[in-house]
Length: 92
Image (cartoon, rainbow, N blue to C red; front, side, top):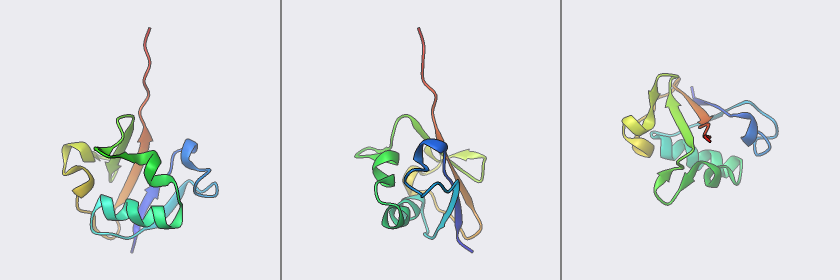
């Protein structure tokens, strides 16, 4: 069973409008690499040279922000889910 990845509205242009896609991999990094192979351009929207972009959050199984785990090296297993959530920034 692959990993389910929930795609936020701003990235759905890259996934042909799909709000959920699947990918395989042993780590979040591997899942993102597989997503990039299927949906070119998505990796650049999620990651920069330091890891996950500042205004992007990725949660494992709707609970854990991967930044507080092992970031892109966080292990995933079949049946897990990843939620990509754009951070909301603003102020005065």
